[in-house]
Image (cartoon, rainbow, N blue to C red; front, top):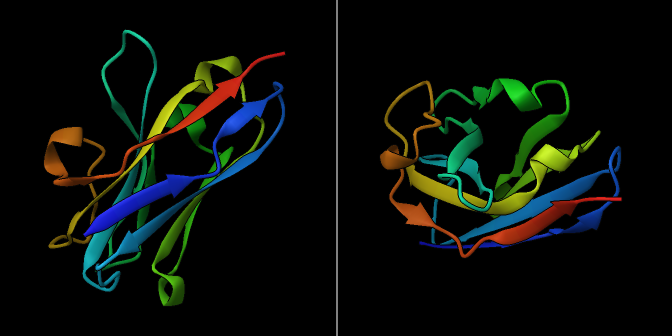
Length: 125
């Protein structure tokens, strides 16, 4: 499986971005997808994920109500819509994937096997 992210960039506080992750070689009916971010000097941390078996999504508290996970299985693509962005959202955003076994996905980065190269998101005025 190859994961390729896109959609990052520079945005002002309060603005929006939509990240995309193309999962080549994956069957999204059996493959969970997660979004993680890493700020300078900080460990990579989970932002959102979706369980392929249940369709249930999970979000870290700091993005609830602002970020929305979606996917287009016909395009093998996952999306992260990010609204009301704040400077603390700045970082490299990574798409992660793994075979889905459970009805609940995990935001623990140690639980994911496949990773994209990352896309930079900078929120600044």
